[in-house]
Image: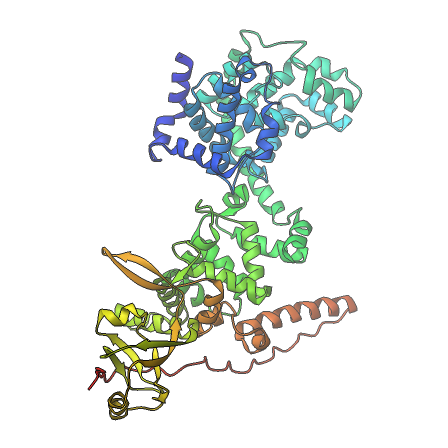
Length: 612
């Protein structure tokens, strides 16, 4: 109807939708149905305004469920599902179609995000603002409520969260109020709250008990004096004068809460979950918030700026590294890649809990937990497998960060080097016998090394026998070819009698077939276990993620630094309790052993083996 069209215009829904692809809402609904229902949403569905006819049908409940599940997937880290959004959604469905109601919910929730985020920090600010406005405009009532130990914090949470829908206003009255809220803004919320208290001021002044006061405000404030036709006109009369007051008071209380929120009330709880002392949680929270965007971070308890995330990670995990460590990490792409690795929901935000988790992994985590983090870092396409291109790109990023941009190698040469490392770390060896009834063998061999290596297969008949390149030929009819040169191989071939049995050492790699340019090509793909063997061959990556052998952790520079910092803090704490303080000297770590390196054979000579 007309009201729905006006709401769409006031909320600028068409402009908001233009930032998202066509079919965005339907895709979220389909995804939510695949991933299963949210137990909190399902529990609240039947309790959401059951008196309304629309929610007495399966169709109405289905619409409400679809919207709430879709929004929970849209913002899983910041809001997810918050009680109160179900009431707003129910009110929107009285006027709008299902998809339009979803977009309206997005606009309303994200315009006042701090109401519905876990911290509810904006709600606390606005309740503080309202309390000051009430004490200024209704001083008698404010003093009386204060004497009873009652404040606006006790009864206005549902008023602000649900935009006065259901409680304290009737549904139709709330819908009329929403006309003004959508048109004029949040100032109407404050004015409506003041109007409700003002009309009931005399009755509330007669109440002498706190419980009776709360019961009246929560459940009886509108029964004795319902909304009349002129109520909204009286509310709008003061909107010009109160707007500046609200803006000024909001800024004041935001700064006040910024100072208070540096000490988290849940520090002990988070510390127990992630393995920190409460003081350490508060220290990491300060680093996470930064100094420039304190309020924006506290609003959602997430960090969206890669530069601020990089600074916090640098100070938390690598405090002894020079300043260029962080800036090089930003320029090389390391910090962006680490940000993307933690941003598993692709929301362009890192939550504080994820930050605590990654800091704990890098500083105190086990070898396996650090290896899993490193594996996720190198898995650029997120398919659970690390390929040669992933490994090459990740090592290049880390090397550039630690040592500056190196002279760029030819891409093919670099990929060949990485592939060789992967082969050396991941091959599985097996002895294989192949029998030939006649010759020739059609094999080209490389004679550098202990045994000749099959470098090329010259005929389809050999392929049919299942011989692959990179196999080593150990013997022909039990004539060993160890340390054989071209002449020795020729001599062995001349003496061969058929049927001939060739003994090979076969090397198998964890490879899969992929289509590249219309052709099938085998590429090496690493699962976590193979990746653990490969990544230790990269000195830069192994040092950064502390991926040396568990017994060799004390030889790792970063591990030694982290251990020293922890020991210093423990000693400082003990000495302070005794009334003295002695700083522990930092032990010098011994040099790291060189990375293992195996001999790489180069292809220099080939010989076609034929029956003479």
